[in-house]
Image (cartoon, rainbow, N blue to C red; front, side, top):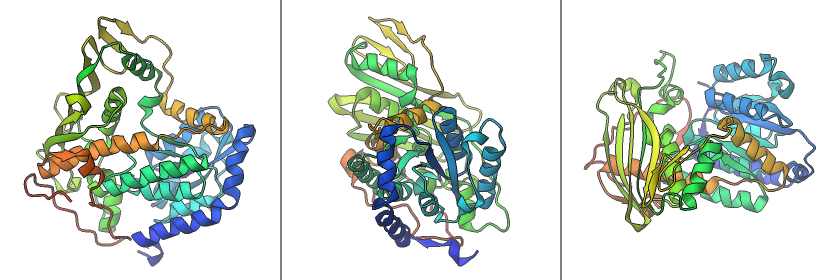
Amino acid sequence: MQKKDSISRRGFLKGSAASAVLLTTGAAKIAQGAWAAGSDVMRIGVIGCGGRGTGAAINCIETGLPVKIVALGDLFQDRLDSCFKRLTEDEKLKNNVDISRERCFTGFDNYLKVINAGVDMVILASPPGFRPSHLKAAVEAGKHVFMEKPVAVDAPGVRTVLECGEIAAQKGLGIVAGTQRRHQLSYIETIKRIHEGAIGDIVSGTCYWNQGGLWNHGRKPEWTDMEWQCRNWLYFTWLSGDHIVEQHVHNLDVINWALQAHPVKCVGMGGRQVRTDPAYGHIYDHFCIDYEYPNGVHVMSMCRQIDGCANNVSERVIGTKGWSNCANMIRGEIEWKYEGANPSPYVQENKDLIESIRSGKPLNEAKQIAESCLTAIMGRMSAYTGQEITWEQALNSKEDLMPPKLEFGPLPVAPVAMPGKTPFI
């Protein structure tokens, strides 16, 4: 693999800072101010051209707002080509797409090139391990951001996202995360009633993301360790955070939203019982976590990716006067069910972001998604180590999962975590 495809972590961050200095003094500031008038087309760059990145670009167009997708970036040429073809050849999308090959970038530094390609907003959809550095570069360069969940896989990443959220607020930049339930009308109306006291004081809760296995790309002889892991990012903790972070964060985010708090501590367990083939990296295939929230409220969290088992994706909170599924129903002293319109939350989250930017009141979801990700990360920490983990311990953890150097070549797989033996760092 060519040398130009490598980038050290120090260089990764240094490059981000350099681009930021350049752009925060010029076009970026002009772009920020322009949206108050609400008359210009928003130019959007896509960083991460897999299924979700391509989907988010389409969702932006589906808002019906004046946007154009103008730049693409991905680690791999074939994924970029697939996204390019999807966006440029669909008759329903073509009017909102203006991508030249000069604004298509590959390699580990593709995100910097997209940010520098004259865009106003970026979609961050590379594997989650890259999200904090990409967000840092985008915010420092004065770009509005839509970023897929999760937004971090370790505590240093969470801290970076929290810092970026504060900088974005100072600069008047919008940040929305892909926890789309926060933009789904049925959830919004249900949680609103929970907060108004419809089920009384919440005393406990449950949340689940139990399903079968997901996709896996068989290793090709020409792939290096790094390429194999990046193409199968779900199965490596440094890239996905494990499935409790990558997928179950949706349910944990709803619980934090309903309780208007994050957990104070947790005890969890999990393992790798069925999906044990090395093709599936080193992540677990099941977790069960007991989270304790303020006032002694306990939430049982469960997630599993094993075929042939009972599936369940849901949330529930139980109060002193009733209970709710958080999604569209309340039972108890008050009986209520949501029966209104329920447009696609994937489109709505982008519409809410773009409209907030154009109105001069940009949404900023960095803190809430960072806390929901840390909720999932602390559950993983507890399951991996077998220890009780407090919020403060998790937030201040020094465990940095990112490899010291990003380049195509050898990259040994970290050992499977063993409770009672794997240390908390």
